[in-house]
Image 1 (spheres, one colour):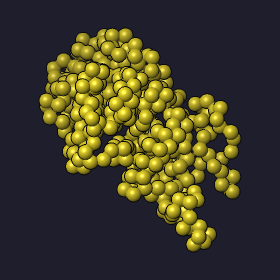
Image 2 (image 1 turned 120 degrees about the vertical axis):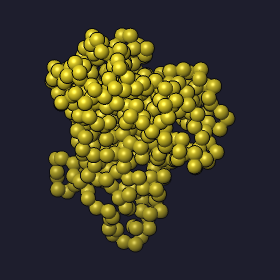
Image 3 (image 1 turned 90 degrees about the horizontal axis):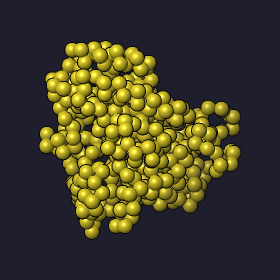
Image 4 (image 1 turned 60 degrees about the horizontal axis):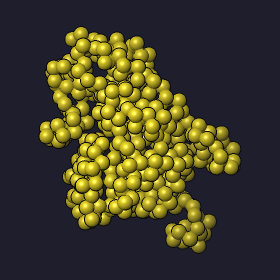
Length: 393
C-alpha cells in the first residue's frame, strides 16, 4: 500500500482504503460473509477480547465496510468512521453513543423532519432532552445551553431552505461549554465542505444521497476522532447493530471516486437554475446560497468550495399552486430523495416535514407554497422546460 499521507482529495477518493488480497484485484472486492474463521481458539479469544486486531463478525468488522469507512474518514479529515445502515441510523448512533439519560442537546430548528421526530419522540424515551434554536442566531444557541448540555447539532446547509450555519462560531461556542458540535454534512459532502477542519467534533452523513449519487442504496456514516467515534459511537454500533451491508459499502466506496466531479456539476446546474427561477413571475422567492441576496451567501462562500445541488423556491398560490407545478412536470422525479443524478422535486410541507405540526413547520419557515429541487445532471434546458409546464399551469 502506498504512503497516502500526502495524497490530495481526488487521489484519496480513488485510492485510499484499498487492501488488495492475494488475488491481486484492481477493483475493491465485496466480502459477502457474516462471520470469519480463526486459526485457533487462542486467536479467537484474542480477537474477541480486543488484544489483537482482525475480523470477528460482520455486524462490526467487515473488510468492504472498513474500506469505505477509511476512505470517507480520509476525505473528511477524521481519524475514524463508523458506517451505518442509513443516515438516520448515523444520527441515532451519534446521539446514543455520545449522550446518556439526563443529558441535554441543542439542535438547530432547521433540520430534517425525521431528525426532529427522532429527537422529540424517541431520544426523550431514553432521557435525552432537546431544545431548538434558530440556525443562524448564535445568541439563541448560547441561551439554550444548559449545565447538562452535551451536544450541539446542526445541519448546514439546511433542508429545505438552504440556510447556512457558521460552523466555526458554533464550534467555539460548543467548546466553551464543554459540548461537542455534530454537523450533518449531507448536502455538501466533504467535496464541498469539511466541518472537522472548521472545528466541528463529529460529522454525520446520509450516504444514500450524494455519496452514492445514483439512488441505489441506503447507508450512513459518522466521522470524527479515534475516541469519540472510534470507541464511543463504534461501541454502540457493535452492540446495537445498525450496520451497513458489505454490498452497500462497496457501492458507496465506488461513489466516492467520482464525488467531487459530481458535486461540482450539481452545484453549477443548481446555480444556473436558481438564477433562472428568480426571473419567473410565479416564483415569489428562491432559496439558494449561491445567490448574492441569500442571507448567508458570504458565509457559504467562505466555508464551502461550491454552493451545492439543492435549492428551494416558493410559488404563488400556496399548496394548490405548488401541487400544480409538481403534477405538471413530466421529467422531474416526484420523490423526497435527493443527491441523485436524476433531478427530484418534492413538496416539503406534505412529505419530508409532513409529520411536523403546522406550528413547527411555520417556525422552520416551511410554507405551503415551498418546493424543493435537488438538481441532477440532466441538461439544464430540459429541467427548465419541465418546470415551465408547471408554471404555465
